[in-house]
Image 1: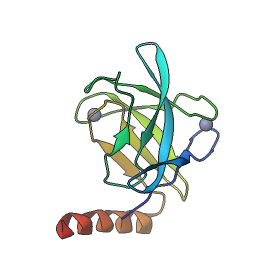
Image 2: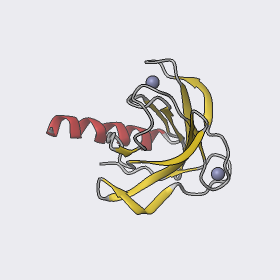
Image 3: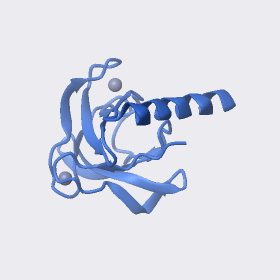
Image 4: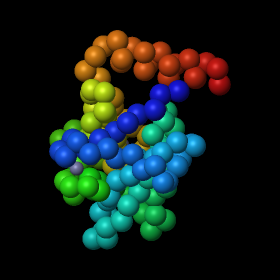
Amino acid sequence: MIKLNMECKHCKHSLKDEKYKIDGHPSVRLLFEYKGKKDELHLSSILGSYNSKIPSFVADGDTLILFCPWCNTNLMSTRTCEKCKSQMALMNIENGGNIQICSRKGCKKLILEFEDLETELKAFYNVYSTFFKG
Ligand SMILES: [Zn+2]
Ligand SMILES: [Zn+2]
């Protein structure tokens, strides 16, 4: 199991929310904008888990604009999702590298890029081994 400690790409503040746990671990807290409304959402910090807490007024299949809860920077990246063509959001990973997640509710696409190849291989190996263990 891999826990990702995400931080804002701009202010480098941790996005970890100790008070709100998902999968038994502190979640990742982000702000979002949806049809003119701003609110917050929580994602699991466990790689491979898609458990999240997103307010119910967001419909499945709709896209969100994500922001840092600390500096309010727009986290949207220039990359689009290979699956659904929505824009992806970009965050840093504390020990080097970054993660991009699709901004469409219900789409599970994410891209992980580590600075260090060894960490990357370890991450993929661990993801793989959990698949086989079922
Ligand atoms: Zn920030
Ligand atoms: Zn997508």
